[in-house]
Amino acid sequence: MPKQVIETSDAPAAIGPYSQAIRAGNLVFTSGQIPLHPETGEIVGDTAAEQARQVLLNLQAVLQAAGASLQDVVKTTIFLTDLAQFAAVNAVYAEFFSERPPARSTVQVAALPRGAQVEMEAVAVVE
Image (cartoon, rainbow, N blue to C red; front, side, top):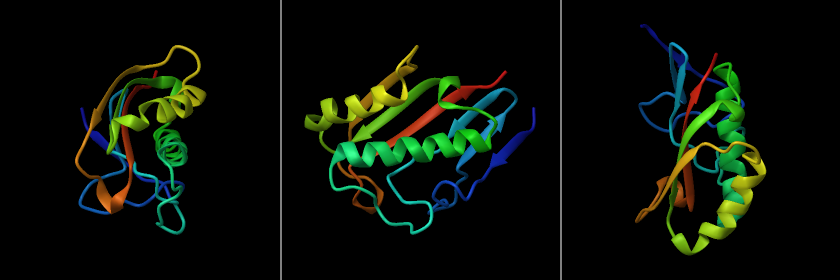
């Protein structure tokens, strides 16, 4: 099964040797998204909640470029630099995944690229 590299200018460009997402058959695997503005490349938001909103908008754009949507997501992973921000991030996450939310893991990490407080990745199934 050949893999398809997914790229869109509606989400931040990769800041390393990786693709925004890969589509393999009916599966879409996104790279981790941090809260970068797609046009400026700057971090959006001072709080974890504000950053989570931008991260989810970036994920949404990458998925759309792959022919998928947030409704197609079956698994997410959230990386936080401070688990004390879990409730705030969770509230924003719930706005984007209000019905039939995907499976999810959330972990605290020591640091994220560019000083971000939040990073998320997703796996989607496209019919």
